[in-house]
Image (cartoon, rainbow, N blue to C red; front, side, top):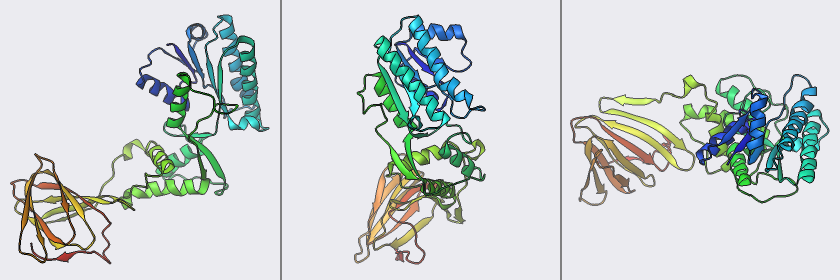
Amino acid sequence: MNILVTGARGFIGKNLVAELKNCGYHNIFEVDRHTESHIFEEYCKKADFIFHLAGVNRPMDIAEFREGNYGFTSTLLDTLKKYQNTCPVMMSSSIQASLSNPYGESKKAGEDLLFDYAKETGTEVKIYRFPNVFGKWCRPNYNSAIATFCYNISRDLPITVNNPKVELELVYIDDVVDELIYALTGGTKRGHFYEVPVKHKEILGTIVDLIQSFKRSRDERLVPNLGNSFVKKLYSTYLSYLPEDQFAYPLKMNIDNRGSFTEFIKTPDRGQVSINISKPGITKGNHWHHTKNEKFLVVSGEGVIRFRKIDTDEVIEYFVSGNKLEVVDIPVGYTHNIENLGTTDMVTVMWANEWFDPENPDTFFVEV
């Protein structure tokens, strides 16, 4: 199948082409402003499906709206007529096509042109009026508020929020691409225009607060509530705008002569993960909890985890090793410790169901 993608180097185009390749499509004709006319004509002649994503949304001159959003559409359709190619055409439009502004009017003119073409030729056309699209690879400080906020906040650059109470209608790039590939394979129409079924309506000020919390999360060792679909997508978007020399960040290691203990990740509702390193011969722990419970996973070295219910004398032992990954639950009501029996450092990944609260540590020291 020959798939022609105009605007292939744009935000949506780049994501779409990448996923088409992931799905096994190989004959993808990528068109951008640098594509030579004779190559463009050859693509139009051979195309079996067209994703028309090219357009202008932030020109130097208002006249470029008409030229980019109507003029190039006209050129595309004229070329298809020239070669009598009536393959399906999908076109990206905007919710602003219903508004009276130069951009919206140019998108509406492009829509009308395509509808007229469909009536004349019998071609199947699929027009999508996209709201604000966000996600990776969108150009910041251009026409996307979320891309700009993610880019600038990650770099401690200033941002401007004119009205924090305004509500935005948003679609995520992966949901857009999934829908476009669904359209390619014969997806059904939804309303007068085609649309992305997964949408988010969010308050601008809330979005900014979330992105700023993502910035702080490294120092606080927090990850956001990824059970919220929008937060999950926004967090992924934010990470894609990190400066390339700042992918890594340090953690505070609590070091003593026994080894070290380092908090890795904290969550508001799923507890925290820490990394414990014990030197050979060292025993750590000898305490119990009322409600706090933990999971230990030794990933390097070898040792033993011991338990004793505080009202009995029986000691239970679990021998652990990085050569056989095995999770050991630490139940409440049992005093416990972990001893390094090897000749090298023992590394243990520790999960606790709650953050450490120095005001209420729920930790009581009793020898196993």
